[in-house]
Image 1 (cartoon, rainbow, N blue to C red):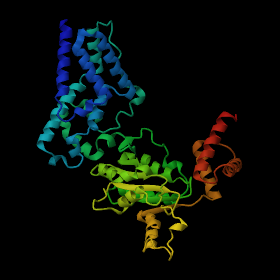
Image 2 (image 1 turned 180 degrees about the vertical axis):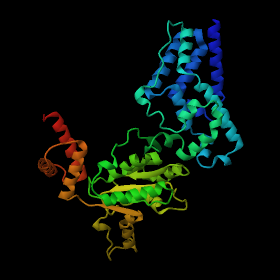
Image 3 (image 1 turned 135 degrees about the horizontal axis):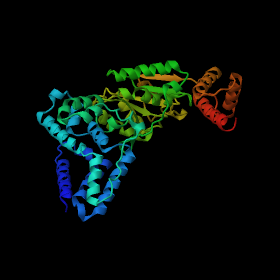
Image 4 (image 1 turned 60 degrees about the vertical axis):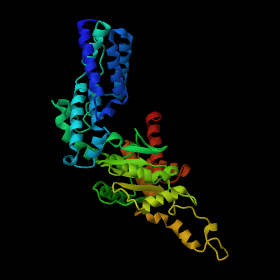
Length: 439
């Protein structure tokens, strides 16, 4: 083994010891890029025993950086800012001055260790591989593309970490960051779905924005005010949005995410079939700095539905207090959410239940348990045409107002009637038709 390769192996062994010595932040190396980096170090450690393994390990490391469009250094800082460990968990809930001294010192030690891993830049690794594998030139390194420059500073402290001489000095700003922006899953995405007993990130949430929604301004303003109350840390109301199909109830809720995600709002979609898990979902959100909307779409219940009972507990409360950072926003086409049949109505001849009318009223008044109910009436012709005009302007469609109105009314007659959804479908079709078939 050459003296140069011996020096490389010595540096690699040092990095391996550093990686293994982490007390709190082991998780930052558990993802694909981190594991590829550790596997590459291991391949270098074997060195001349298997040059092919070194080449393959480097290729995998390059590939995962390209996959996530992050360099090793950028990725490591992001992982630190989102880490979920005892230090970050406590830092997001209590002031830095109240944290355990041992916890702070362990975090400082880990940050110094991670800084040594950060300093192992792509250029250095490429030079190591060239020497060990006896290549004629340095292998290509993954570099961030120019169009990604604006995105890379989205998380606070990134630029500070990149220039700080001693990372342990950043422990207090880092703790304040966790307290403000959260950790783990909720720091990495803004939209989630409860599925098979766990939260799943929604990587591409519906892009609808409030500016795209027209009509029902009163309902929109009331929902915005309630959401502002939630974001300000006060007790917000659970909200039921009910009314005609296609009126934009669900779109209005989803648009809140794009309006307020930069202020810590998160949206969690819970399907009706999983409403029984709501108490579990709420406990996962307790003590987290972000604010959460539990989004339940197209809500209705059958008699003796377990989901009905679970949601009722959340809305009414039980011995465990509802977290103040959580509200339920539900949509429905029905004012009375529990389906009622004529056979449900008690008659004097029935002897099954003495207080039958009380049971019926409990079903019918379930929607009253929402603190705020917003009604979306069917769109009349003028409202429908106003929505069409608004969407056409946003889409850059230029035809005469008379022709636009004529085609919009024809579309509503032949398709799904007058509604915001119908207007959106009409404009999408008209825009494509004008672009492709009409020159």
